[in-house]
Length: 179
Image (cartoon, rainbow, N blue to C red; front, side, top):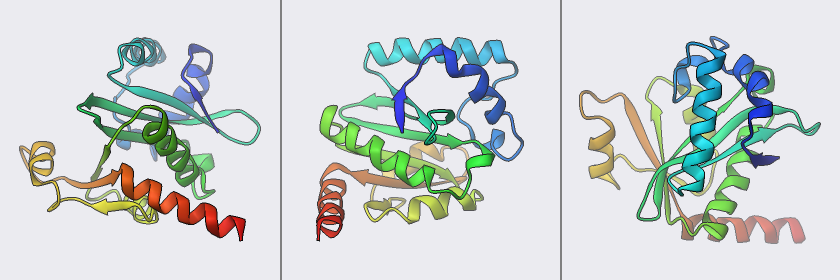
């Protein structure tokens, strides 16, 4: 479902990303395919430098349908950015991608906290993150980070996923499946 980023999928991803239902919510605003390609190259370099972790989200057929990344990694924390193309909305890809990515982050990369900043008016993303049993609204829990992401005006809600909480909930989910 997830794979390391490469340049071969950029054309498909760019076409999905520029859809008006997706574009306003992506982290980088690309004005051209070439710009998207250049930034993807930069992300691959940043991953080698351990300042970000970026993956392509794939559907069951192995086709790229979106991206998920952890950026601004400092002191075992970082911010999550995810987007999925509109043809794949409402099919559970977002939740499965996040669960898979969190497992990688917490088990392979020893990340402790993942922050998610979501625009207050982005109801779709807020509902998606609130379905995750290990995600917590952190506007009050992490006030310094909340103030940092809302320096000029309050436009984001802050959510966080802690390593321990994710692992505890994942163990419970695995036990439910086994019984």
